[in-house]
Amino acid sequence: MVTASFFRRGAEYTGFKVQGHAGYAPAGQDIVCAAVSAMTMLTVNLIENAFGIKSSVTVDEKKGIIQLSVKEASPTASNIIGAFKQELVALSVDYPQNILVKE
Image (tube, rainbow, N blue to C red; front, side, top):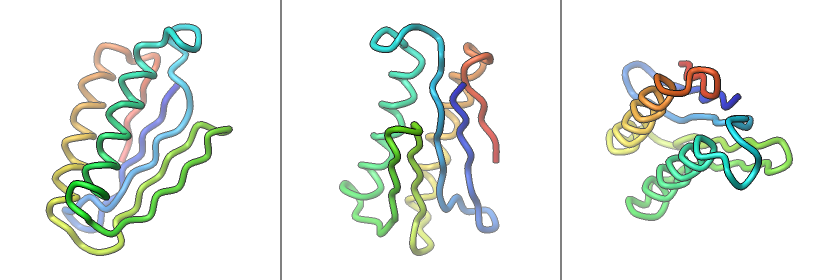
């Protein structure tokens, strides 16, 4: 199961941690894992590259973990992370055995 945890400071999102494997289908055929991976990388690239927001990203491929923490308050980063969370929640409605979203 993929577990996505979201972190806040007050009302503002400050980061997230996505870990695990969806287990929906064999590796290379898992559409749930592919969707989560694509959304996660898009979120990281938007924050770091498109908007240049200072953040810290940690990746552990062996454990299937990626974590992002925004280094300074940013309404833009908060909005991007919030939209990412919203999409994962929508995906978890269709695949509740494969994705858990928590705050």
